[in-house]
Image (cartoon, rainbow over all chains, first blue to last red; front, top):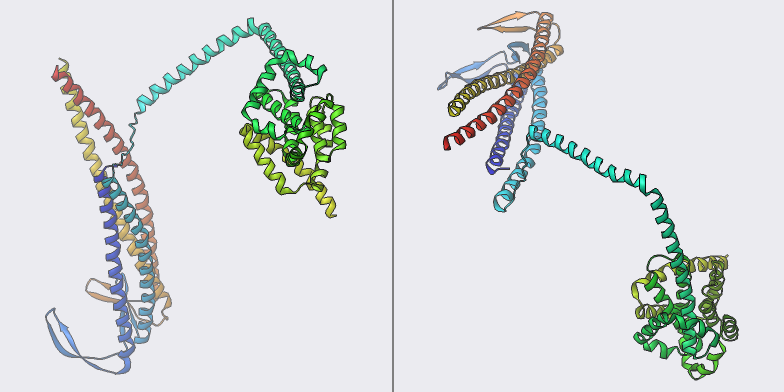
Amino acid sequence: MEPHKLARLKYQQEGAVKETDEKIQQWEKFRSDYVAVRKLLNTLPDKITHDIMVPFGSLAFMPGRLVHTNEILVLLGDNWFVERSAKQAAEIAERRLKETEEQLRKLGMQRKLIEPQIEFTSQFQTVAEETDVVDIQEDYDSDKEREWKAKHRENVRKYRKKSQEPEAANQNTGTNGRLANDAELWARLDELERIEAEKNELTNLGLDEEKLSSAGESLSLSTPKSTGNEKRVHWENQSPPDEEEEEEEESDSLDSDDDTNDEKDEGINSDASSSVRISKTILFTHSKVQPETNEASLQNNPDLPQEGPTIQTPADIIRLVTVANVPKSILKNRDTIPVNLEAAAPVYVENNLVKATEKDSTPASTVTAFSGKVMEKEPAVQDLDVDAKPKKMSKFRAQRQSQARR
Amino acid sequence: MSSVHAMQQKETLQKRLQHELEQYQKTQKDYQKYINGRQQLDAQLSENTLVMDELGRLETAANVYKMIGPVLVKQDLDEAKQNVQKRIDYINGELKRHDGLLQNLEKKQDEHKETLANLQKHYQQAQQAQAKVNSR
């Protein structure tokens, strides 16, 4: 808005305030007059006559005497007069006083309404003057608007036509082709899924075999998948401390599992649902049990080569696990049979795990193990997995705890 | 040739503009007049209702006078009441009439405003056209 318009607005508003102020003054005067009249009317009939100075024109007074002190001629308005006694006249004055007070109250409210408007206007004015405020204005021309609408409609129609043409063409010639495409797509997806599953299995086997330096039967399977091994090797290079720490057979399998998880994540990224789920569960059990394995690894490090060769199949691992303490055995199970695990299997394992954690591990230790693992591996993906897992876990725990309470 | 035509157009436009402006100002004046009249009627109405109120409080024996010119004429209380009531009714009628008139005038004013804006636009266009012709 232009400044002079604002100034005019402010001027008008100030005028309104001034007007109300004047009215208020006027009514204040009325009020004081009525108060005086009432007072006089109350005292007037006290005496039969009053000696007064009678105003004579605007300049002079002359002495006079007021008689009939109880006969008042009251102007009611609109040239109507009534003869009243002083007391009655005082009552009339009283009523008018009330009226004036009511008026004054209304005027005060009006003022209160106008004042903030002025304030706002002046604020707006200073803002407009001091800072570089630009008023965005758009010229409106109804004729141009009409033209534009017509054009726009035309364009929309053209666009619809255009977009419909290729669609029609597709429908004529491309239904078969599209179907074929779909079929191809599905075939491709199936293939990818299969490859993925194979890779997971093979990498698992390969890792075990590489680290344990034996596992002859699985070797033949894993050799063709050298690319997977390479990847894994790369990971191991990146995190050498892991290997050194956990070179006992159980921890090895743990490690390998982690690696495979990572590889899966790398390779799959978005698709492949079932295998990913399994991998997630595996990951979770790792983090939980790690502290114990670490402790164990420190003690058992020399034992590694001896125990290593015995683990060639999942069954071996299970046997080992049952011999060793419970949490370790859980890990073993998961690692070696990941592909075979169905939805029910993880639940069972988790149950075991829950028991184990309740018995053996303190919450603090689990927490520390958790964070350490996360830091070492791909943080983002693992975080997600970890988040997903503990929910399930907490359910079980909650159930168990609630039952225990009962 | 075209410049002459433009000139003529511009002149007629100017005349129309002038005429429209006068009309607009006239309606504005009327509007103001009726606004003032309405305010006066409002004041009179409140005054008369006050009188009516006071008359209602009087006892029947009270002396009521009406000042007509320089003299006070004594009137019967009932008569006075009737007169005041008539007066109030009349004022109410007048108020209604004024309200209708004011609404009409408002409409008229808006119409004038619109035509004025249109004319002004056309006039400016004509001026621009003439300026173009002249510059050639």
